[in-house]
Image (cartoon, rainbow, N blue to C red; front, top):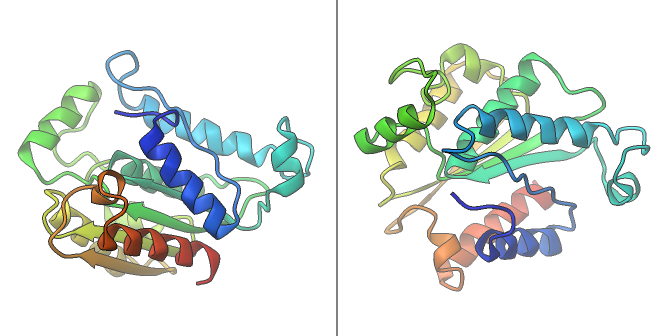
Length: 218
């Protein structure tokens, strides 16, 4: 519902970039109603393929050619972005991404269905959906088993309407046979994406610090 030009998201990304010493690419993917789902998935996949074009330090963006290490790529997003991150990881795991090693991924309060209103909205925004058990909002064991990264961090918030769906994702990922490692961080007493709207609170700072630490050190 936002874009990379939103100050809310830009400030968050800038904080992570500065503290973790990374290069970040924010994806301006197509939004409903102008471009219904699956535009968000396809645009994001096109973006990561564009990044892979810099694998020989000969891509169209000089900054990436000079500073990006494509042997240590991270993918992440919150809410719908967390859902999109999962879809990208399954594509990496099944199709591959030449010249790029996706090392880790972060899903913050990811959307994987569960609330009736949210499910109805998603299906309305995705005219070619497969119903309530569409694999893009209810990942199958096969999808989870081919997640294309080595480590995954998932944040959930106790008062978020997506809390149970996020926990279910982590539990089912652990049962899927996926060979990577997953960590879940629960924030008690907080709601969906609280860290963006209350960035100066103790719990928001703690979330951001865990996000940064996971990228930089773990």
